[in-house]
Image: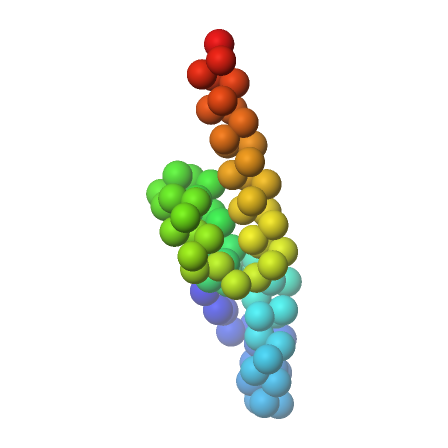
Length: 83
């Protein structure tokens, strides 16, 4: 989700398209989301599987968050089975 803020507009006007991702990450409070952030949210809400999120993610930092969430989720499942 890309919202036309001053930063976004300036990046587009100056031909700095490569900086839009950073503007989107900074603009989360205004409702902007990258595809990887959206995939992470869908996984967190259990709307998609880990494999689906993993298959479509590209951002290493968000991928690391996904892996941590998945590890916690799997550990909880194992703990529940052991009880």
